Image (cartoon, rainbow, N blue to C red; front, side, top):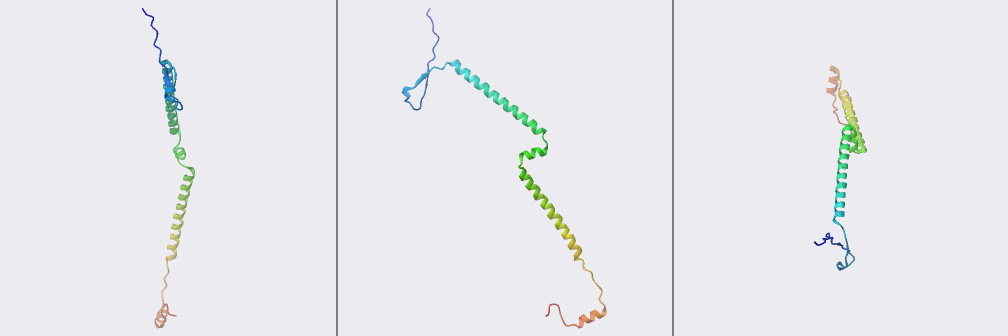
Length: 134
């Protein structure tokens, strides 16, 4: 029987962008090393996805523990909330001032009438002046 030699892997050429493709340098890369690299990369990506899932679950738990006011303030700008509050207060003030002015005006619109005597009616009817004449 012949002595069998294990298959030697052919070296893979590494392209060099500056050099001529005919002058490429060949470096051997065993298949086991490539498999190890691929396995390591897949483990790292699995760990990263697991960590991302854990972080997402923790943040959702924290959001559930927060009150509604805290969730709103984290999403909205505090200056926007203050501006809206200022507008609401201004509208309330305008509403109460206009209602108060309307109530005062209704009280002032009431005119009192008085009885005229017969002498006053005769003096007005004999007078030839009219309203608006100079």
